[in-house]
Image (cartoon, rainbow, N blue to C red; front, side):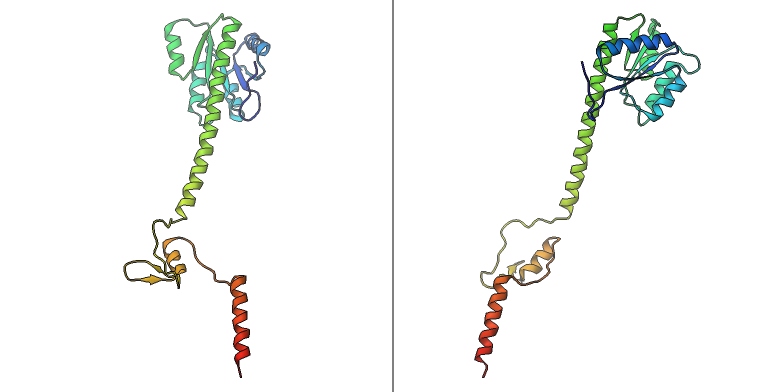
Length: 221
């Protein structure tokens, strides 16, 4: 099954485990069924260094590692602005309820106990990837909608609407702005909108004006 991000790439998975054998097994199990860009880290410090340059779509994280354990890595992921939404699946042989609860309290999305079947790993990976990719798509759509709404609000702020019945003189085209005051139409529009006028002359009026001028010249003695 292929999963493609909204940007057109394959999902990125980061596998963090101090055992190279465990990392290779997990990578091979995923590669059999899914096309993903799988990165590996041998410790928590290396994982965070990778996360600084690349935000994966899923982290598969061992709990017991020398130095920084999986709980500390997960808390660091949740503390980062660019990484806090990344799902984290803990992979560990610790079966005590306390360890499982600690994993979720640290911000884990799921918990898979070793030894596990490849089908179970794939099922959980697929579910969390699908949820992550869908969230990313929705976020992109929300951001685009927010951008368009901002542009629309800015446009509305620049426009004052003229609406209702506006009394206008059928001869001189002045507009009655109140019970007794009549204004030129351009003055009325300028006062009730953000538009302003730059006067010119249309072809019809130009032709009429020239005709009138010629006629007046012809009448001169």
